[in-house]
Length: 346
Image 1 (cartoon, rainbow, N blue to C red):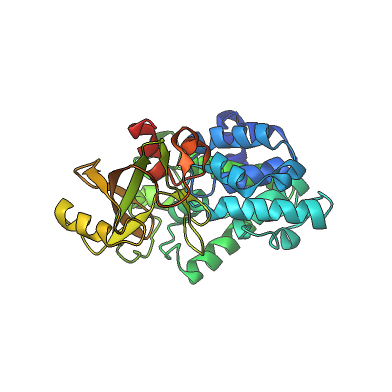
Image 2 (cartoon, helix red, strand yellow):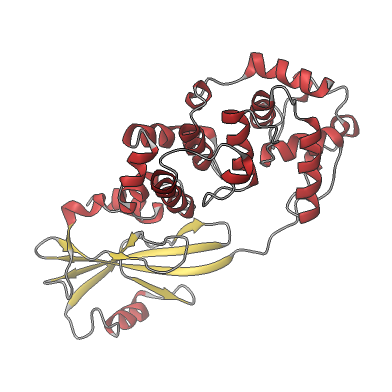
């Protein structure tokens, strides 16, 4: 097909030199694809290199402690990806003797692997004709073919997958998949793409109808909820602090944080101190408290915005077993906590 031919020609002269393109090792491809979910290449590349250096094989990753995996992942967000990565590594190493599934259907059985990731690994590593559909592909296809079906609808997912599967080069599926993703990432960009140098401009419906900025169509998600987080940074005279491991389900599962008090809204220092004095942790204990950041730090997540304050609690002795301040940086924490630790200079 002409579309595939033009795309592959563009890719041959415009592709970026990336380490995971120098191998067909499924471990490396899988690792790169998981890291690059919800993450741009420039941000994900250092993490990929760090993981390959620290865990060169799936057996190394499987043997690692989850806390070490989460620590290395710190800053990437969407920590469930790291937990699923580790769980799948243990499954591959133990149950599959280190051998990756070699087809799309079996790759889907890996925790954290969906249609896109399974298609990428199957095509790149095993030459299976399985079309990838990610954000970049949605954008390219919706603009080129002028499709206004919402990409985050079940109808849209099916429509674009079917179209991509029709377009894929059956003789060179790996190159086609990488080419269309690269084209979306570097040429057919979300904002202000340079359409004048695009090899598809003459046949692109969106370009010719001047609807580039309107495609792809996405159903608006619900407005993010506001939450008010207050972290208690306890510091004792023997230079210890308190870190708690988050249990249960949640975005920060198994990560560490300072003791947290969540309030319904932003409250005054006087009122907050009365709350702290009635918390079981510091009840009937003498302490001095000060607010580290006057203005709340706003940490935006996909479904909620966290308005965060850090309260410094100077105390003679911790009411529970603490950790040495000198060891705080060794713990896997959310980037929000990590940034505070850096700025506070523990």
